[in-house]
Length: 332
Length: 264
Image (cartoon, rainbow over all chains, first blue to last red; front, side):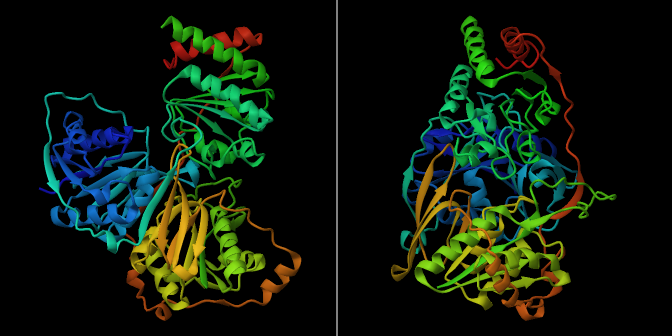
């Protein structure tokens, strides 16, 4: 009966990609333990969305549909999830290593008295049902293995973009179980007042498939425009990033900073423009599948990590690259 | 106002991290130890709150004896006193055990506002503030880039960074915990008079029994996560520099991205 639980995430009426990655991770664990995969959906008017999860591997969906859960807050969501977990005692509980997951899951883990591994890049399961987790430390300068041997559920936050989404099975339906959270508005100590939309409509660097990143070589804030043009040429799933040097010089905002004191990213393609490759930057992006470096300095350390490099002025190379990418995409 | 800042001493981000021979930890030789960068924002915010509303800023840290240097740095910035939890039994505490221990110390210190960094840049767990909130039954806001206090109404409004440049404004009742992100403020430098004064400020070192804890509740014994091997990530090999004139090289790069990497 105990199951493999995953916490879904949604935004503007759509599940985020991490939800499907978590379901695929859940399915892989199920292949070894046979336990059912259960998805938790929290929000308001989520029932039709919840039916999308069956084909991706959910055997059951626990639907917590309530006005009080309409927008995410760590207090209400933690209360709702721990209430359900105490009743149904899952053996494993997974969430995303995302802004929401990192805010929510530590509170859930502490309340359930169990262990939680942050930012996992590999989750295996051993014969006795023990998760063997690999996670980066020192921003990826090292990796470590960890286990949660003495408490349940074993909890882990999966880093976005590390698990391949398994093909969906259109014939599979999940059983939907509705539940009411035991929550009163007047008991809550925190309340979301307002959401301030960001300047860019682009996705977060941690979720992006392709990142075009600028460093000190970009020289001025306005020049990020040429990186944005390249990002637009690549299309959906592309984000613009920056090195600490670029952020510290005031060329970019910290929320797109890649590196040890910014975000650790894991895209399919990382294009470093005018970035020399300081240790603290490399720590944040060296798990990218492909790295391209564009730099005037042939001795820049970034070339030691790059699959492809062009020694040249980024102001010459990047616009040409944008043209070439557009041309190729137009050809189909 | 009783302001407590929880901080950790970590290797400088420019440090080269080297594995020890049995792959259970890092080699500490040659490491430059500093205050966790995100904790600097927490200290600065604590000092700003004190300047505006009055009160006292206490620095609380769990770690080995050398952590005292990070506490001294915070005291030199202007904090009033320090508490170092360095009982040998605490070694190996995970986020859960650390939060438990800090919560006991916080109960003894007393608090209206608790500030931490959004994560420590060594083990990158990013969990202690939430654990503290749970043990102390307090609200928290993580990854804050703005904070406004209304002490007479016993509330605060924090700006939380989420994803894709989006921010949330969250109102919480006080006392509360805030985990600080870069952009919240600009941490002040320590001054020579500040450093001199810091030498005279008191740093208490309560033991485990003073906190009402038993050795089996803390350290590795009290941890929920069991530490396994450390290892190096697969090393990337330098690839190819595409030679030739820029237009040709760029065209070739795009072809490689399509044909080899299958991206475009």
